[in-house]
Length: 399
Image (cartoon, rainbow, N blue to C red; front, side):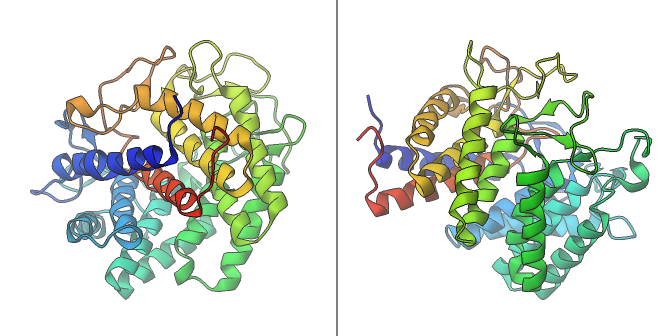
């Protein structure tokens, strides 16, 4: 039976407002020592109290963003402020970069080797500055963004374990995130810097990491943009590639660039065709571009973020180009995702990790890598697009 646009819209909105956000509000707040617990089991019980800076910052961003863009609910702003207070007190090393992890009390556990702590701190304080009007938050977001740009060519710096000159490679993740990050804090930056950053990121993502012969995005290339016949050089990360495509679609709309939009949609569809598991359904986590065994033993797992990000890209692709393949894939990925990841009967939120057959591999709802970010952001993005399609009276291919 065909599902209506209205029903899809209601499903994404209700899951966001009545299931996912309440789960984090109920279970993640550390009222005694500040910040958020992210290691939550199926029912929301805390099973580890370490605090990971990027997940703390992502949760601050999520509640600030929803306060700014969806509804100015005081409880959302209170959540964001609670996390920000902890980050301000404990999150940074002396030179201003952000640690990777802390213990419950806020003492540092892992050095600031990971530039993504800085990326999400920038997003968090950028959104919170809008929500609160506080200039100190705005300045902190801006100075952290400048640090990211300064570290961009050597993100791990002295904490890199690679011997720099033997096989230098650059990774897709940072240019991908900068596509989104530059728009997140656009209100704080010089317009010329924003345009320059966007231009550089689009070039990196769509020309350098995109392999035109394959029609796919490589996760690592040599510094001059060539393939490397190595584990890292052959690596495909389908979820990363597809997530980046909705960032690119947003930029293409902003720039009135239909060719860029079409290319982003085509890469999304190419990646789905390549990475969809023909036997059990769902998207593989990692693949080798030559079909060799990947080095990641978890290569065939089905992950929450990969599937929700794919749904966003397909909906945006359909919204902006009307390509019926986007809608057909959306219905397919939606059906797979909603049948397996949500867990309303046991405390809410989504499972993060399924085995290849689509069964929950771990009972956790949050951990070291999964926090309050991809699911709520994805549900928000999807209900926005579906709401716009409804408002426009757009028919779907099945109608």
